[in-house]
Length: 294
Image (tube, rainbow, N blue to C red; front, side, top):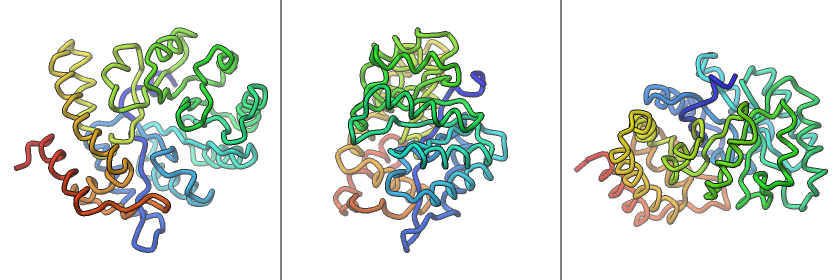
């Protein structure tokens, strides 16, 4: 399993049509485009997918669409995280039926659960399926830091095979990597991708890989070839785009870039706001600069 879970995994966005429903055609096109750009696999149903603005049935449908496009040739990690253990188990069982390679979950949030309750959440899920777990460490969003000493008891369960580390604390990424040789660690913040893999990450799961996967595949290749100056320059160029996306709205911005690439992904769900014309112009200008478009 570990040999399959490495490299560049887009955290797929969810395209919507004019009626606000999941756009199956655009999602199929998105998966195909990223395969041609050289990605290693896909992370489905995570934060970038607007997971907590989707119904459980929509999350199931999205996973089925992606799995059908991948045809078993590209590994899929399915994010099944919910506040409710029962709902997470329902999504995990569905993911197992679909035939994914691993499941992933953010810890239960909002109610400030105890460490014992968080550990039970993961154990209960894993006791109901025969799939490995990639825990999703995103303390800025969940309020739970799974890289802390108290949380490391989770990794004693060998069914937990890795972590998606969405944190700027790359020291903690290094410490997670050295808990056990069997753990797979994915870098989570695109803007520190090069730094993350230099600290030992096996790969990365990222939002902007939806629309710039080729750049991150290239950075990864340059890093492995020891061409660090070129890798840093390309990371900086990608960060110029990311900086604007973070200012105007990450998911809406990614969807707009994808529309420029010929894939209509619609709007993000409310309460996310649509982009203004001025924001779209800012994105076009910096994106065109990255790709040398005049």
